[in-house]
Image (cartoon, rainbow, N blue to C red; front, side):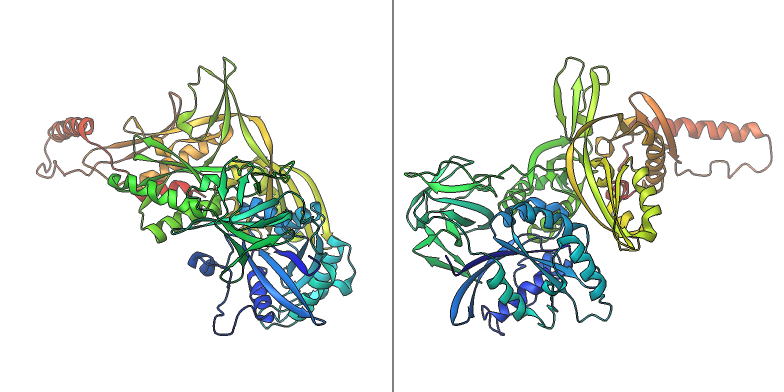
Length: 595
């Protein structure tokens, strides 16, 4: 165990974690030049294209220093706020962390929140200043920020350029010198933390774990504590670039276990593995069920693809355990699924993967969050969908989830950002100058307000400089109403939204105007209305396509024209009673993107 070092890399999005991981793999000869490709640990095409890490990955490297052989287990973590639970489990499996900060951007929101998680677990932090080769790098300013944040000395900060490989040797030396070896007792009962899992269509689920105490041998009978299920360890091994089987792994090792598990629900990130015959006293702390925060309906465009969509979602769930879904039906869209996501980026990625990996054509409904509705009888209902709201006569009050949001920006953008957050029903709790021109703002605001287009607006208001991070803080009472959209008196349930009473009129007005542009004209008038309960608050009319029936009347008495027009009007009215309105896909999408 003296020669094992377990560490992770934490950083904000796009600060160069994956590139640094690539360099470490090259420097330790884990990879040959021939096998190497950029973003080695990112498997999905999507991760490569967008330059983000979606799943955390682990890899083992062997490093020689002073004629001693050290085993370095690197756990790469996602950088986006949506995947913060995965990051917390990766951190729990390590003794140290590389804190990577971009020399051109400085310390950003995700850097700070991941750093606090690492400090909570008493990790040894090694600060790394990346992108030193960039002409726009500001090493001295950013070093001041890191010193303020960590309280370390300036000499401890390693200057690195992951792109060119400059400074990577120093990083490896510091990992061996500064990060403590894992503590644990190989003779104690087995206690291993699952920090990730991947699905293989031939062998079932591979669970990645780190052994805290005890020893595991292939063929042992093991038990997963949170689910209570028992399995045989068919194969265990370590994670090089490919999987390498081993006969036995001891305390401090990071590895994988294959036990023929076919259902993703049985492997939960954060769970504890122990032996059936000699179980450990207690599970490793910190396990929690991942709670979805944003809900949206996913429907097949062609109703016949419903079963295929279910199969695709089930396969996707094996790779992405934080996705949850239940069947639901809608009058406008037919049968589909109500899916729970960790956040908007997660939702976008699931849509993209359904399209790429499974060729599914889908419609998404407006994303919303889950509310707690209390009835007059004192019952509490979880509402994920506006149509699930109880009747207004039985409804006592609604509670909505609130978040603690931290925005880090340059001081010149404070005004516009504050205005934007206050418009979104936020209250400013704190402002803290990190340096003379960088400021951290803390807001409390409803989660539902950031679900729409908050992130895009924040980036445009701050010219791309502001970074954003949030934590859920609980539920609070709110004055919310259900806004329905009616077409010719028929409700379109896919366009319903739960919205704050003060914003209902302007939102209803905007949706009606937008739909008027997008719904094609028919042979009859189409009334588009926004309603709260039975009260209509906004209306637009798509005028009918009409034939000019008065063309043959030139001059003469006005009553002749009037008679012809009245006759046409009657026909149009009769048509409207029979006609149905088709809402194009673009209309649903436009409502999502209302700015």
